[in-house]
Length: 132
Image 1 (cartoon, rainbow, N blue to C red):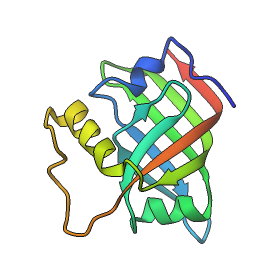
Image 2: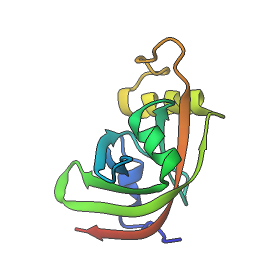
Image 3: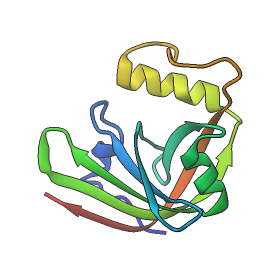
């Protein structure tokens, strides 16, 4: 497992930095989605809804890549190649509310749809590169 450099760990915790997550479709083509991002000190965490393309792709093929650009300096970034080590419904609702507080300043996630099941995706970094 690779370590997130201390010089760039702030990109995983700042409210204005979004990650672009690349997954693999069944035909091998890439699929990229901007997402809110979180960090537990070791693993990168994202949250998605069960049934979405990225959730289906990651359940089938756990390899993933993320790119996070510093919102204040576009030449400073963090790139991560890794794999999903856990995808769970447990705590998914609380986690998306935490992300809504971080990114929107709201206590609860305002875009829930009826019947939506939230998933926490835990990513273990295998390769990390940074610049700036």
